[in-house]
Image 1 (cartoon, rainbow, N blue to C red):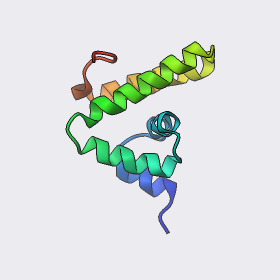
Image 2: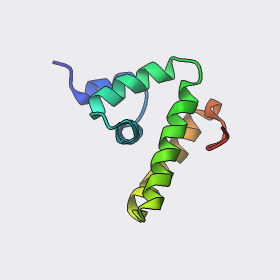
Image 3: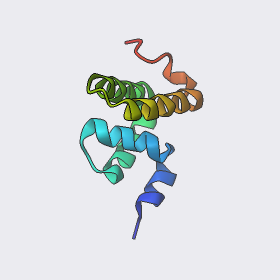
Length: 92
């Protein structure tokens, strides 16, 4: 049986990054891990993931969820550090 940890290890992102995708797309984390793997292998997929994290961050700020916004800032920083090809956040 394949576990969430197996899928996380395979997809190339951290659990927090996958959780941000799951939050954005309203899907289970295991499905988000599969989506992450697909996006990381596709043209402009890294930018798409970056934009999802930014969208989640903006949504947290709008609902005054300071704790979640702080968490997502750290997720975004980590993602950008590990995927510099994604460019600056919010450049679309």
